Image 1 (tube, rainbow, N blue to C red):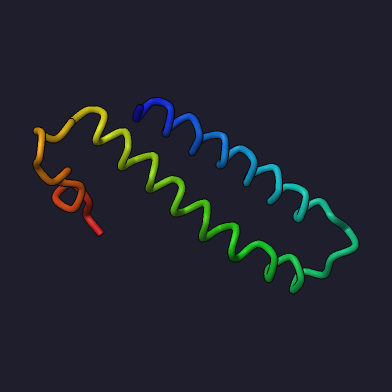
Image 2 (image 1 turned 45 degrees about the vertical axis):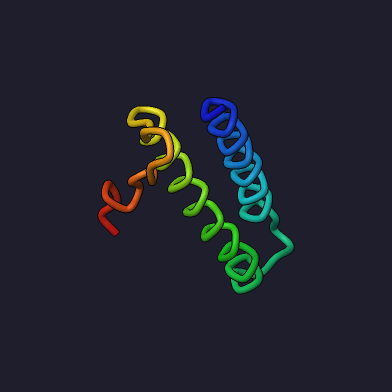
Length: 77
């Protein structure tokens, strides 16, 4: 199940990268417009990357049944 989730998140990251590239390559947009469009995408990308890290941690360190996952212990932030 985690592998499937990781694949979906990676697909979302690929789609996000394509969307960001389209914005960067759009010559009709001003830099301000590009910044305004890119900010939410950059934030979303950050969340998706953290999600992949968390899922990979859980895959490598599965929690015991009926126990918390322990993600907060492994994160530094």
